Length: 461
Image (tube, rainbow, N blue to C red):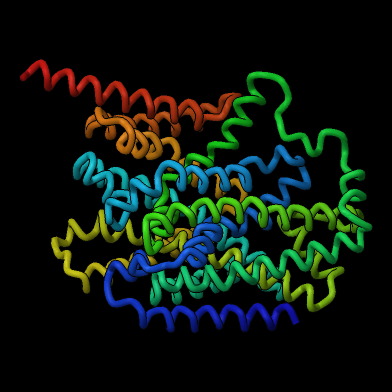
């Protein structure tokens, strides 16, 4: 029954893509849904930004194994990101009336910064998209037994089809529908399992001491690891195109800010549902071998849940993953076409640019699917993606918005030093999180580069 529902659900998403394509008349429609999303749709879109495989499968696995400290990165860090976007970034960015983050870098720091930011931004999504494709492959493998690779390939085709046709309109419409399915499906399953367990307190009492500790153990290294977990998505996903597109798609500046705050609250509350379900499942069925811990939750549902609950769970899971994947594929595709391909082709008319964006959707998806075939740990893929943008793009974005003396030299030096040092530190494999030191070096590059170049200009003057 669940497998049949999954098939119907996937076909329905193809229909949404075809229907949404009729609303796409321009690049602005395709990238930003015409900047016409009301609060309820904008909030759903922002909530759905990351509520995918990492939260439902990856974070629930980490929660079972490492307790509350294992999920600081997601959902706490992800909710922090949306809150900070609403507090510090949405208003300033919405007023610029641009299509991509790299457009902002071009306006603020010049063409070289625009190209470099785009070169850094596009590949940062491959790991994120790959994580979602792995998760959908896991679902199909769990339900039907087909090999993981075939499942990844099939899901790639489906996501490309409806994102290719409908762009941000397809993303926004499916995000709203899928948010409703997510809430209903996960809430119903959580309540059902908690009733079977005799209440949440029974589940809590069965956990080892320290399982629900929110603060890290004393010490320099645990403290740095804790801080890194907060900022990986909390700061690293702020300079990401998918978040930016959802903010800019709101119908007004005020709506964009409110949607960011509302999306943050929704994320923090709803993201705890799969964690509760996983922990309750472990309590109820301790003899069920988890194998790959990412598969534990689907196996519990298939083995012990009523068929109707199976439909609700897998419907919610598919909804979450499709929401995340479609937006994640569209975001780098838009940057690739707008900031890298369009200047090379020297043709910037609306029709050709829209064609390049749609073609870029397929290119991004194929590269991501290849990565998904090579690496299948969801939590690691997502973490690496967020760290990528944190060390290279967060500092110049923030400095450009809030520091008047930030300039092109500082931005270029910040991106190059931040990303380069992160690559070096990753190979050295030190005891502390490499992204912290790389982000600090990116900050030093921005300050030193901006002040030094300003000093040289004044000296020449």
